[in-house]
Length: 141
Image 1 (tube, rainbow, N blue to C red):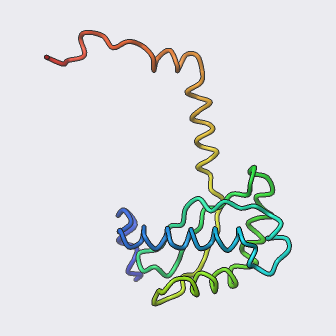
Image 2: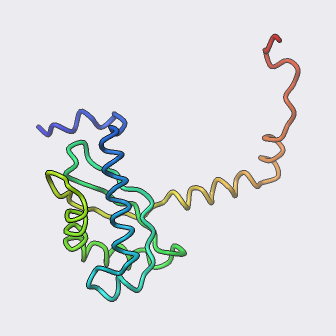
């Protein structure tokens, strides 16, 4: 039985967060400088919003989004096609016992933020949020 399955509900450790951020920065730098030998990938501007690592640091999932949110599938395909070269770049930049397997998924958080802004901008929601507090809110001052 896999060891990491019991940790599914736990928040990431400080080490996982730190390594994830280092991988995120490294991937961002490599993509920004166009160090991958793929003209399709180098033509795209891709944001690496977050990298989450598995508890054993052997798998790193990068949440990415092409500039403007267009050509998502094309960007994912290019990243996945070049994952070995990107993995080598990460391994070279970081001193980890194991070079993590890189996985790429579209970062949906920007879409969720837009939806939240749209909802909060609706007149009835704005009215509810801006409603004055009643004097009977239970606070005894």
